[in-house]
Length: 120
Image (cartoon, rainbow, N blue to C red; front, side):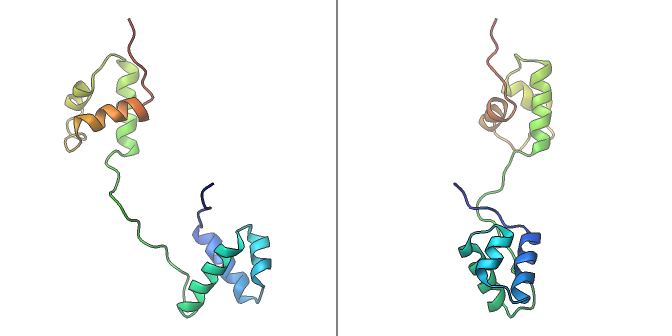
């Protein structure tokens, strides 16, 4: 099971309860975050001098090439023409797919656009 993502509102609630003098267990119970997450957030808040909220660390890794807009365009094309190939999709939408490889377009058609094989 993955760790629950903290939003800015969650961090504000935890730091507000911490400033009011609540114990870590009380904060954990009220916000339904695990005790360790509350401890880490309050420690980070305490270490930066209680001036501002802890900020999220920048995301690492490569950014996604395929946006939701591209997925929707490809999905619309595949829905209207089920036998269309990835090369044809790339040629039709050359303006938005110019920097995207053919294999990425194929993967988008297969995975994101939920296309099935064309059967005669």
